[in-house]
Amino acid sequence: MRPRLVLVAGFVALILGALALSACGDAGAEDRISVKHVTPQVSDATPTLAPGETPTPLVPPELVLSTIDVYQSGAVLVSVTGDVSGGSATFLGRSFKLAKGSQSMFAFVGVDTEDAPGLHDLQVDVTLANGSKATLQDQLNVRSTEWTVDSLEFTDEQTQTLLDPNVTAAEYALLKKLYSGVTPEKLWDGPWRLPIDGPVTARYGEQRSINGSAPSGHHGGTDFGAELGTPVLSTSAGRVVLARELKVRGNMVVIDHGGGVYSGYSHLGAIHVKELQEVEAGEHIGDVGSTGLSTGAHLHWEMASQGIFLDALRFTDGSNGF
Image 1 (cartoon, rainbow, N blue to C red):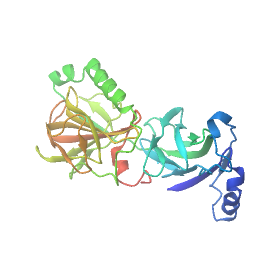
Image 2: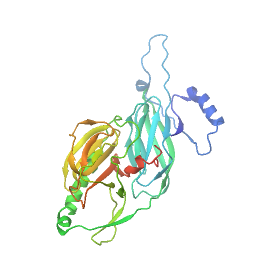
Image 3: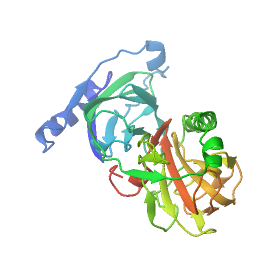
Image 4: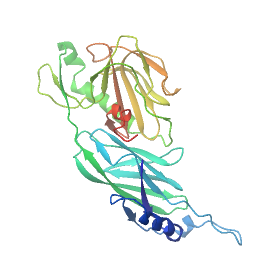
């Protein structure tokens, strides 16, 4: 994690010393300080005090990023420490609500498959406990991802039914709406883990040629090859928000990990959890199958943050900085 400092309305006298130390330290040219003063309404910021009582100073906010280099389909864990009661991060025109973690407010800021490479501004607007506002700013460098191409063959029946644009669009809309929700608290715990021990047969973002057609689109998850009945485990703790059969993804389980982060497990042969059930990291939630639009036994694993589909493997291989 790398910290970012910001000066906030009402904290000038409190943190002048801290800023002086920061300026003399080995921060490097890339460490930037953004200053924005916003005067809060007195009724919101000044509590009623007893005679002789002094207000308790608030801890100023500090921006901490898991990385400043992020690949297309990757995510940056954005955290704000200090006496912060809420806020949101804005990146590439999209807003990500901050949720309450154990030591900070946080959001996983996702980068879409088609987002342009290069430096882009990140802005985090927060509200402090006394009602004052603060803005923290930095830049993230989006790196391009090389997308692989795969050729798939489906029967006429599969093409006519499961590849019907109306069917695929309806399922995508269902998941997009589900993945756009934000539970305002942290449910995940510890490092993210793989849901299965097996070879990766298709990566997230892969472009596909269907029955000889020109490659198009982006595969929305990571596929693992495995035998029928192989246990599928939760990538982290959370709450089950979907556990039923869908047209394309077959039997599917979706887990809400809090803060707008979700994981999905598809083509299951059996489901072992129920909706609204709390699960732990590594819990047995289903078995590998070949339901829905599938050419053989495998697990389709996907993750999303506040409506943005992401490469789930980047949550486990360190490329997101966590």
